[in-house]
Image 1 (cartoon, one colour):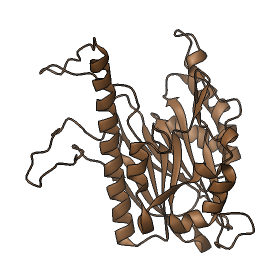
Image 2: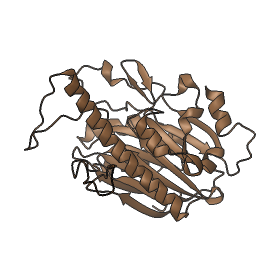
Image 3: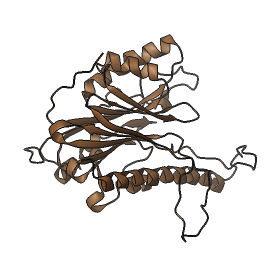
Length: 322
């Protein structure tokens, strides 16, 4: 079926971690479609970045049930667990690329220093990069990412077998390895953003996805950068009591982000997390079956064609949300 591109006023963008979208069996996939498709439909977004996609067919069924059956889909590479990120667009995709590397470069102190980690820090899930034609709004470069989780990385022996941590310092080292890995991914992603600015083929740049870290964290600061080519956090414009994408033991956090260039941020009309009824997996028994819903809330934002809004935009909206 050929997808009909509708005329649009502005541009809408979303990100959503679907949680374990595996093709386990028909009952599981059907349950995921029933649980997730109404949420995806309600986003009414022109472009959506999805995370934890392990089955192209399962995602296609969710899109069909959500009214996006003819949209363009771009899949990133997947990790050892089988999950990856995907971009779905109901607008024309002019260019697409999957950003991958076998080795995440990590900063050295002298230009002739040997890489400190060699190939021990691969990019496990390739990032999706697409140039989208958003009509009067302009061309938008959208990058979809899913960074390393906060789960600690154990020390390994020379054969690659993990070693158990037994002291607080060793547990701390596990957490530090995870932060280093996530930060290396963030630097790689920021280099892709820098390259997008340098090419100049897009009027707007956006990075969306599950960053597995909160606003103000080191990896988020690396991606956002600063100044003329900095990115701003859309979620910071949402009222504090509505600003969360995950729940863990009752604690609400934002780890799903939308980071946009300055001109795009100036055109922000509205943003929201669809977090009503959000799952808190920490409350489920360990032997509970896989849930059909997600433990992440989607984030969706709308941007106007002009920066001259009657509603507060940019920094004003951040101040209003404090």
